[in-house]
Image (cartoon, rainbow, N blue to C red; front, side, top):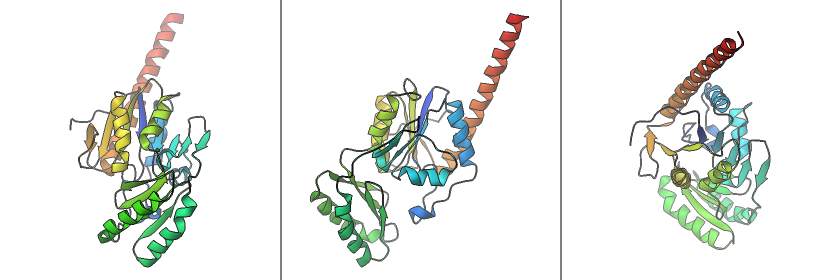
Length: 261
């Protein structure tokens, strides 16, 4: 893939969280956020006119917790939850996740090492600690989802998720791109997982950039080696945008002084 230039001022920036902004951890609750990340995201939000959003499989409340006190526009649970630039929140109706919990709880209880993650309108089973159970977990989830209308299975890195059908990160990015401050900008979406491919496809169709964090076959058009490399690139981009804004401010000030003298 081609080398990656720094972020331009007309970018609409969309960022996955786990495996992208933050390094993956054995369990979702053990993820650590680098201390400088919040400051970098705040600076990008400022210099991109507010056009920075998180697009994650996590609920919005968890994203807010990890990045507090910063609250960005967000798409949580792959787009089932949305918070726009004005802070207004929308959530898809629950298609029947409570019906899935008893059999999934029984599955996890019978197989130590599996972890159940309950979300607002979805539920996930992580098998990172017991990868040999992948086939069994996938088959179980497929059979379970087949019995509940409106539910579909989404596969990710060592995780199977049951979520509302027809909801994905591409749809979330499309929704953001229809309204300010994202509209009429060039989208860039950074993600690491198979669950991010729908987002890559959308930004490519909109003339933007899909940025893969890691190495695997993907519809992304650019890549970095991992979360640390992405954070470094975001930090350098924020600094460059800050310098650019300062230079433009100096030019405007100088032009005003010349005009009024």
